[in-house]
Image (cartoon, rainbow, N blue to C red; front, side, top):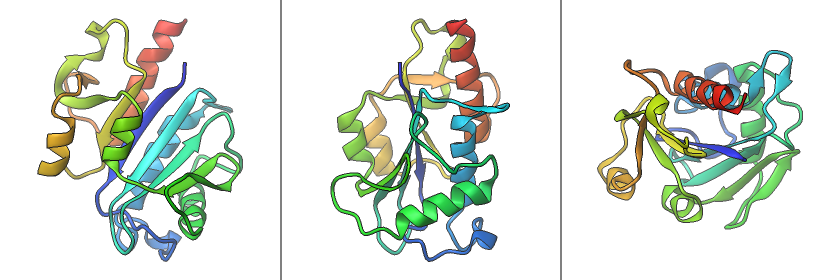
Length: 190
């Protein structure tokens, strides 16, 4: 089973014209997305090979773009924000079209938005008002969540009929939510 996480980056830069030293400001909170990438893939001394992470970037100057990172293929990713940011920056410097194009091993980029991914995969929405993940059987394989911004009205309309799942009784940061969901999936697999 491939587990998927889709994170919408509402202000995230869509070209590689950002400084790795200013990912929170100059890159539209790319730091939040990098932490989500790390939460998707890193274990202690290992990587999750059964996870794919989609980043939908909606910031200026060339929105929308989608980055795909495949755990079973990715190389050169280290467990720090700068490493993920550097690989995303490299992908965004690559000219892309409607099909995914590989920038480095396991990292792909294309033009595309949330609507397109919702047409390609069946996602559940991670939402604090959803049904607790521990009360759901079976657990969905694919999840969508937002960065530090709420979904826009247009996005809310697109996702309104998705099943809603909660990571627990408290509101968590996006990267922490991913860790909690993967932990629950791990518990059920053992």
